Image (cartoon, rainbow, N blue to C red; front, side, top):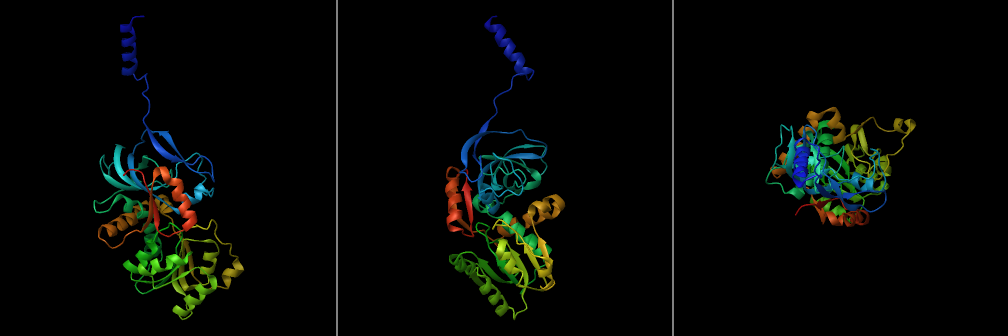
Length: 351
């Protein structure tokens, strides 16, 4: 066969789609086994389904569920290998049938169903993407919407927080200060802030907490009784669960609200019916952006839009404890384990 015939044959295959070009690839942090370091590897870009956008990732926050997933706590039963990370910012690189975002848009996204944020690119449905104002840096945007959006859902939408009410808020490592900012600085409530480290109590006071302490059950209950004349708090906003949440049950007043917004200590407490009958009558509710995404997508979109607008207006601001490159993601995870600071840790994928 002549070279001319070969050229014509190749042209025919390309023209008819019989020749498949190599897919483009990108770097990603991959969790191959639980309780093992993530590995930086190459992944193939996937094609976009209708309504999806490909985002060139600039920044991605490490959230408590990312850290727990790496340690093998996997309630959503994600299969491994997987690239964790879901709270990210970047620029739209490509769209397929999207109505509300376009190529070149500066965005913040939540990829809670498929994850994939610790990577150079991430494919996200447009329902999980919001435009990011030019006034909000990529790093701040990646530390904003999950904790602040969840706090807005729990404190405002569900518990109907009002000015001067008393809120007992517990703060998990890398969960951020969203609940404190929303309660104290937006709604002007009085916040009793509880954390795991004595070193964080001063930071909580600086951000507007009425009173702070490192967790100790007896001290916490005593403080709440002193500050509320033994009536208890109007709202408990808990991100720690475990024994801390069990202690919080003893701090909420009659017809108050207890909001479960996390499970960072890996498990929820077991409370018997007989125990509940000895407590005041109050509401227990769980809040989850992922749940609202499924059951009330309008509210899901609304609360995230609200916190982005608040940030744009200078009413709220996330706190970032540290920033790491994608290559140093395991160092970032080790810092969480060692320091357990409340502030967000950001993975800077693109400088």
